[in-house]
Image (cartoon, rainbow over all chains, first blue to last red):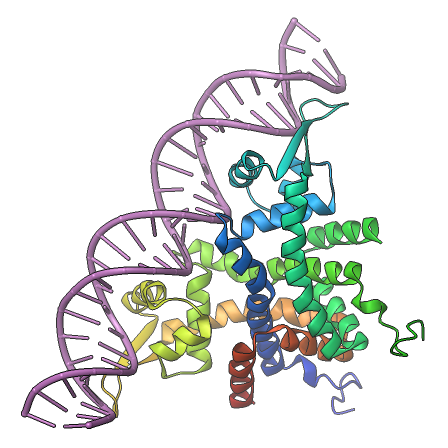
Length: 165
Length: 165
DNA sequence: CAGTTTATGTCAGCCTTGTTGACTTTCCAA
DNA sequence: TTGGAAAGTCAACAAGGCTGACATAAACTG
């Protein structure tokens, strides 16, 4: 329409529009993590513990190496977090049956309980936002987020998504 | 349709859909920060410096207190970052004219140059994602993000948005 | 004018969570 | 049986959050 070179209206790709999107991501991510952060602050845990708990719950029996790849941190960093979770009885580490080098990770009942608290809080905000925005906006939201991921992370995300529902 | 209580299809509010949205936010945010992070890693700077530079560029002459509120950190934390940026000649701090207690912050030419590099990188990814998803998806993306913010952050975001274009 | 509040900066110390590098143990597979 | 992958550990370090205490200057208020 207004752009003769393509026949499309590309006003949504202006620097100003992109900047607004960038700032929206920044402010929204703060809200996104705020509720779980408040819960975790009361314990000796942080966001790193939340992430580990989330993905162990999501894929019970996952190996340390797999978790490492999903979280994108070093094994030393993850190990510190994992050790405290195991010590505190929230995570169980079982030696692999076929490959005994591997450790398979599971949430204990206490771990599941914490996961529930954290994800309830996070989902509540997400649900409220989804409800306000409506299904069509949510579809767009997901599309843009997927397009924003690094290709290997997109693959991991897709795999998780398909294993889910 | 499928939900007799509301007459709406609320399948987009299922726990599984919400969980996918949560994971999408996690993976997308990683992509969102990856490019600037790579640039910053070569210097002695981190994400905190990027945020300060971004918002000083966005609102030149902003005061320290205002920046504090936008970034949501303590003044000690911000001050550490600001001090290095001023020492390195990327940010200039001017004493307020009407209220001499205030410091007004501006990017120097060097600061503007770095801001440009960082935002170019971040916008490039954003632009690619926007282009793939299309204008309607982008509108939905923005709607959901806005709804996800804390109310006071939403106000700040709106104020920035209106001051922009 | 005296006293209080506000804006800013700074020192010290702490925590989480990331990093690198070096090293060991276990154990699968060629 | 030996090489290499998987896992774990120790040490050291840095960024970037936090709290608490304190200093200074300027503005505001009674």
